[in-house]
Length: 425
Image (cartoon, rainbow, N blue to C red; front, top):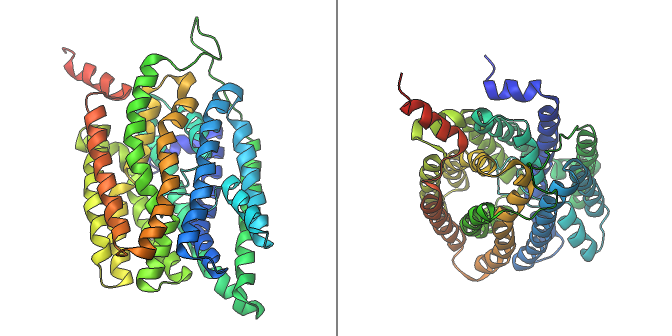
C-alpha cells in the first residue's frame, strides 16, 4: 500500500513537479559533490586550495539563498527556481570545457556545484531551499506537513543515491574512449548540464499560488517582531550546524580519499549505500515524531545519537568499516532534516516563509562557507580525524541549543493534538 505522504505528493500537480525538480537536482548533486573536489585535485590544486574554492562557492551560495528568500516572497518563487536551474546547466558547461579558474569559481557559485550536506542530503541545500520550502508548505496541511516533507526528502535521497553511481563514469568513459581521465570528467559535467535543462523545464511548468497578505498588512511589510525573535533563535542554532556541515560535504570526500586512498568510484559506491539506507526513515518521519513525543524531541534525540557515531568514524581501520559506521550515523541524522524544515514552516506566517527560511539559515550558510577552508587546513596540517571530531562536537552543541530554544514551542499540529487530548468527552 502506498504511504499517505507519497500519495498526496503524486496527486498534487505542483508537488509532483517540485518532486521532479528535487529529484533531478539530487541526482546531479549526488555525483557533483564527489567528482568536483577530486577533479580539482586532479588539476593540481592542493587540499587547502580546494577548501578555499568550496568556501567561495558556499559564500556565494549563501548570498543567493538570502536573496532568493526575500525575492521569492516579493516576486514569486517560480521565477527563482527557473533561474537557478538555468545557472546549474551553465555551470556544467563551464566545467566541461576547461574554463579558466575564475570562471569555474563563478560557475560553482551560481550552479551550487559541490554544495550539500553529504550523502543522503536529498538535494535540500542552496538557493533553491527557501523558495522550495515555501512552495511545499503552501500545498500541505499542518497535519500532513511532516510526512510530505519526509516524502520529498525520500525521493531526493533515492535520486541522490542513483547519482552517486555516476562517479563510476569518468574512469569508464576514459577507458572506452582510450582518452585521459579528464575526458571522462567532461562527460559527467555535460550530464549535469542536461539535468539542469530538465530542472528548468520542470520549474517552468509550475503553477504558483501566491499567498495574499493578511488583512491590514501591506505586501512589502517587514518581518514582524515575533517572527524576528523566532528567527534569531533559529539563526543561533543553525550557526553551529552550518560550521559542521562545512566540515562535511565535499571535504568529507577528500577525507575518505586522504585517509584510505579511496577513488571516486569507491566513494560513490559507499555514498550510494549510505543514501539508500538513509532513505528508509524519510517515509516514516511522522511516525517517528509521534513515537518519540514531538518534533523537537525527535530532532534532538536523533541528532545526539548521530554525533557519537560521527565521532567514531575516524577510528575505523578500513574504508568499508568507516563507510558502514557513517551510514548508520546518516540513518539517524537525515530523519531530522524534513522535520526541521517542516517545523520552521509550521511556526512561521505563510506570507513570511521564504524570507523566514532564508534568514533562519543565513548563519548556517555563512559559517558553512568558513568550514571548508578550516577543514582544508586541518586535513593538511593536523591529525586527519580532527575534522570529524570537531564536526561532531559542533552538532552536539546544535542539539543542545535546539532543545533549549524550542522544546516549549510546539508546532500547530502538536498544539491542536494537545487541545483535542485535553478536551472532555
